[in-house]
Image (cartoon, rainbow over all chains, first blue to last red):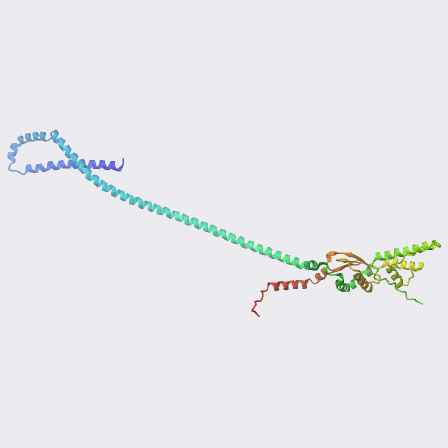
Length: 216
Length: 175
C-alpha cells in the first residue's frame, strides 16, 4: 500500500470522528435551552408525558428514512469536504514531505557522493602517490643504472683508448714504415739509401766483426 | 829470408759463391780445352775467351791464364775463398743495382773481412734499408727498425701534430 492509500484511510477515520463529534455537539446545545425555564418546569413536568410522546413521535418522524438519507447525504458531503480539505493539506504535506525528502535525499546523496568522492579522490591521490613513488624509484634505479653503465662505459672506453694508444705506440714504427711505403713506395732508390745503409753498417760494425770471427 | 805473402785481391765484381763457382767452372773449361788442344797435335782448337772478371782477377793477382799452373793456382785460391770466406746474406726491398752491391761489398771487404761474400735476397716488406744476416746474427738495418729505435721521438712528433691540430685557429684580425 502506498502513501496515498494510507493517507486516504487516515482521512476517512478523521472525517468519521468529526461527524460523531458534530452530532454530539448538536444534541448538547438543545438540552440547556429546555432546562433554562425553571418556571415552566412544573408545566413541563405536566407536559412531560405528552412531550415525551410527541418527542418519540418526532424522533420517529425525524429519524425516518428520508431524514437518515439526508443525514447520510450531509455527512457524505461533509465527509467529502473534510476529505477534500484534508486531501489538500495532505497534498501540501505530501509536497512538503516530498520536498523535504528530496532535499534530504539530495543532501544524503550529496553527502554520500562527497564522501565517496573524497574516498575516490583519496584513492586517486594514494594511487598517484604510489605511482609517483614507483616512478621515483624507477627513475632512481634507472639513474643508478645509467651512472653505473656510464662509469663502466667510461672505464671500458678509457681502457680501450689506452689499449689503442699503447698498440699504436707499440706499432708506431710499423705504421710509419707502412705509411712511408704507401706514400713513396718504390720511389726510393737503393742508391739513395746507400748512405743510410752504410751508416747503419758502421753502427753495427763491431757486432758484425765479432760474429764473423766467432763464425769463422 | 821471409817473403811477405801477397794478399789475394778479390774484385768487387765477384760478389758471392755463385760468382766464384762460375769463375771456377770457367777456369776448368779453359783447362779442359788446353788439355784437349795439347792432346790433339796439329789440330788447333780455339781457346775460349775468358770473361772480363776472370781476366781482371788474374791480372790483379798476377796469374797467367795461358799457363796451366797459373790457372790451377787461381782455381785453388778461388776454392779456398769459396770454402773459408765469410758469407753474409743481405736482403733489400727491391733488386739492388750492381753499383750498390759493389759499394756495399767494398765497405764490407774494407771493414769486415777482405774476402767477404754476399748473398743477395729480396724482402719487400722491409720498405727501405736492408737486413744483414751473419752466420749467427741478424742485423735489421731497415727503415722500420730505425723508426722503432726513434719511437719516443715519433710519439712526440705525433702528439705535437695532434695538439697543433686541436688548437683553435687564429682569427684573421688577431695578431
